[in-house]
Length: 79
Image: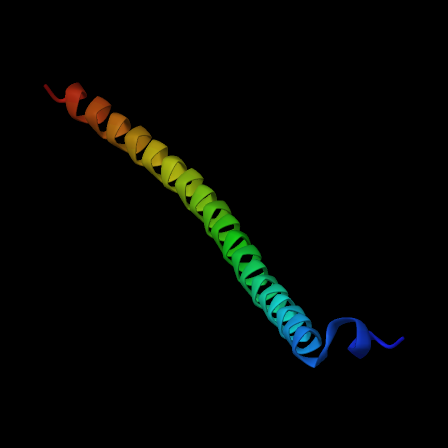
């Protein structure tokens, strides 16, 4: 007995359609997952870059503060 005899053409077509819909949904979810992974990587890269820039800014500010302190000390000698 063939599958067509057990279910009929309409049922087989319906099952095939559902299988195709499932396959399409899986492909779409795979694409979205890849996009999410890329976005997470980009966010991670930007966070690392921000950390480096923040550390650099702190060093520059510390250097500036040291220079200002030196200038204040020099000015105070003339008072």
